[in-house]
Length: 216
Image (tube, rainbow, N blue to C red; front, side):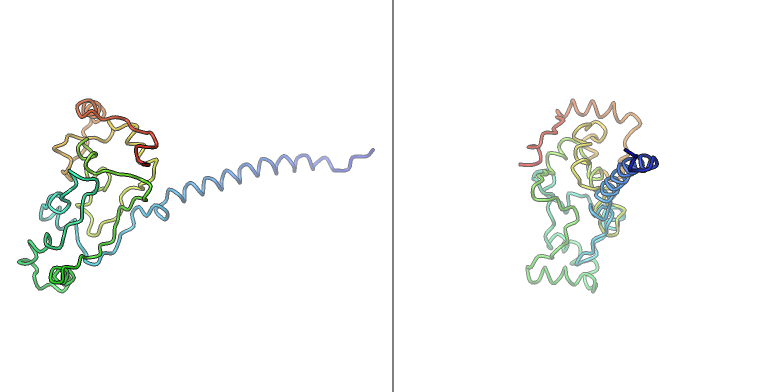
């Protein structure tokens, strides 16, 4: 019986199979890259707020401590958003007639909260407790970035699970002395790993990576 297909068909079939593998691999690589990009994670995206509050001005220029506004960061799961009264402690005297701050004054007069746009918004199925991270020596800038350099706040990190697990698996890479947690100018020392291992021991930090740690 004569051969139905030409010999070149074998080469074409092999090229098609190998080509399909590369194409599928390329598609998967693109999907992973897009999933990790700021387009999906919103990392690096500046959020417009009802009042253009500048952390760069308040933290870096004036020296306001994180805890002055985020009062529950050391004691509760959420860091807390300051009430309007906290703003008015200063702005009843400073920039008290500025048109830009009229929403703040109106909120204070009417006792209606300003509807701030949340920047770091974890999904409901992920549990995060600020107080335990602060207690264990995780600095504000480790997760939130250099907010003291942000005129308007943006999300510094991806907040994806692999980002969380990187710290949970090797906390010695990130922890710092507790007295440096709120220091926005803190720089990890050259011997960070050695220091981190000692802090992990001193602070009794566990490498928690089970699903129930965050998904409760």
